[in-house]
Length: 448
Image 1 (cartoon, rainbow, N blue to C red):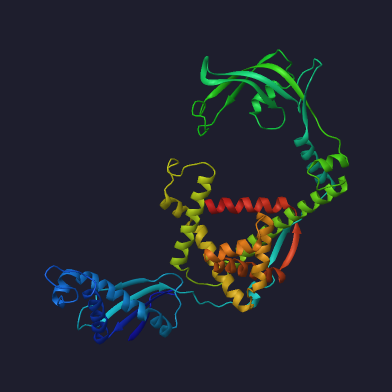
Image 2 (cartoon, rainbow, N blue to C red):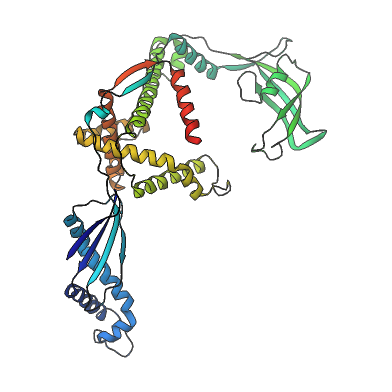
């Protein structure tokens, strides 16, 4: 076997493998002997059909089987001899094997780019971390939200106008100009004033209205509104106020804490849990922002060509994930007229950035000797179990069954590498609004 390597680009290689005619003849003989004993040809007893007859009827099939056997028996050896490791499935190019002739096939594939990187290139990154701290005011707001959910609606007996916080009960008729809209009527609709669940114009029109009043509101609906009868129109709602209800919230005491399921015996225990949840949420936000900034700086390190196969693989995953999220939200991508090819073009810059950052992170993980141990994988499954409520062992069995452990290990390796970079970074706490503004500007630049 002869193996020749060509360098097509910084990241693309072509291997030409040449197998001698003796090996080709041996393989073809093996394939035809197998065929002779398994096929039935009219006029010949099983196993007695001569080779020329077999070639006439089964030549293409035999050539295909011989090709696969020749490739399968030498492919790994050729890669080992070349010292190369493809990043994705290679493209094969060959003609059908013929008796008495050498068999030549070519493999074209991407390899990981080689580039220079020094520890000082990624050590000492400047990271701006949002200054997020739990306050008593935030805890009070969360408690108020819990009380709001537990509130009981009580009819207002006194004669008074509706106010923010009340629930107004109305019958309404919707009009397009002077014509009633088909299906635009409803009775006993509850409008929660100030909750933002109804059109703002409707809430404003009902503030200060009293039971027995009739009031109107003009609402503009955008062209993409899901109700096609209202989309793009200025719709007039005529509302008759039939009732007024006020919200009676529970007292903020230990009984209220216990009413939330028995997990909390006191208000102090409930406040502690709220504080812990907020701390966890803020830490996740800090981690996400730190990750974003590290990746932004990492992808600018090193000069190299991005392997096309990795970009295409990332694009395929991005488009698939986007389509799945649309379907889960109740939207049919086909009805929405989304073209996967157009989506791939839109996602390409993002995919290239992600691949570039991943390649640099891989280089850093090697330099920092970051490794994924069994306990790292087990810890990840424990966290997944906490989030999903499923046993860690069951989750691990599912990953094993679906051969998904390698991708999980790769994700853990990336996270550990990011943590290694963060450990050597200079972190400065800043106002979250500053980061939000910068993130918005970068998003605008990406879109342009």
